[in-house]
Length: 252
Ligand code: G
Ligand code: G
Ligand code: MN
Ligand code: NA
Image 1 (cartoon, rainbow, N blue to C red):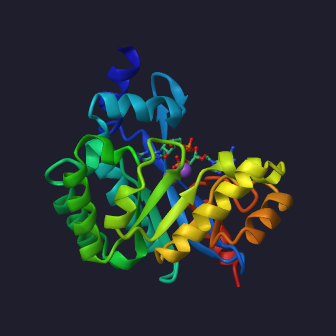
Image 2 (image 1 turned 90 degrees about the horizontal axis):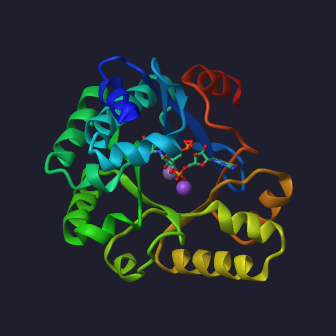
C-alpha cells in the first residue's frame, strides 16, 4: 500500500530512469542493440528492484502510463544517442499491449523521437497470449506493419503454447538464462532444449538471443549451439545512458 502510493507518484516526481544492456552478434561480438530496463529511485524507498515494482505496476495497471513513458524515453534516447545500425529493445507488459491506445501511443513515440521504426524491437512474453490472444496478436501485427520487430522474451519459462508461433512472425526468440546456465553446466536436457529452439527458430525464419550469458564458457557453448545473438553480464550489465555513450565512443 505504501509502496503502491509511492509508485503512483513516481512518474510526476521524475523518479524513473532507463538503463540499457547491450545485445551482441554471436559471431562478431559487435553490439546490435540495447535493451531498455526500467530503474526506480524512489524518494520514499530508495532504489527499488524492478522484480518488485514491475509486478506491482502490472497489478495496479500503473504499468500502462509507466510503459508509455518507457517507450517514449527509449525511442528518444536511441534516436539521439546511438548510431543508426544499432536497435533498441523495449519490454511491453500485457496490460500495456492490450490497452486500446497502445498502437497510437507507439506511433506518437516514433514520430516525436524521429526513430526509424525498424530500429525498435518490442519484447513480449508468452503471457500476453493468456488473456486475450486475438487482441494481443492484432496489436503485435500493427507494430510489425509499422516496421518494428517483435521478440519473444523469456522463452520456455512461461505457459508455452507453440500455437502462436505459427501465426506471428517474431523476429527473435530470447532463450531464458535458465537454459543457458544449464547448458554451460553440461546439462544434456538444457543443451537439447537450446538445440531444438534454435532449429525451430531457424526453420521459422526467426533468430535466437541467448540471455544471461555471464562468462567465456557460456559464450562458447551458446555459439556452438548456434544462437544468433547474446546478451548478459559478460558483454555488459544494464548501464546508464552516459555509459552507453562511452561504450559507443570506444567502439570501432
Ligand atoms: O532489469 P532487471 O534488470 O532486474 O528486470 C527485471 C524484470 O523487470 C525483467 O523481467 C524485465 O523484463 C522487467 N522490466 C524491466 N524494465 C521493464 C520495462 O520497461 N517494462 C516492463 N514491462 N518490464 C520491465
Ligand atoms: O525478463 P527480461 O529478460 O526482460 O529481464 C532481463 C533481466 O535479466 C534483468 O533483470 C537483467 O538485469 C537480468 N540480466 C541480464 N543479464 C544477466 C546476466 O548475465 N546474469 C543475470 N543473473 N541476470 C542478467
Ligand atoms: Mn526482456
Ligand atoms: Na528475458
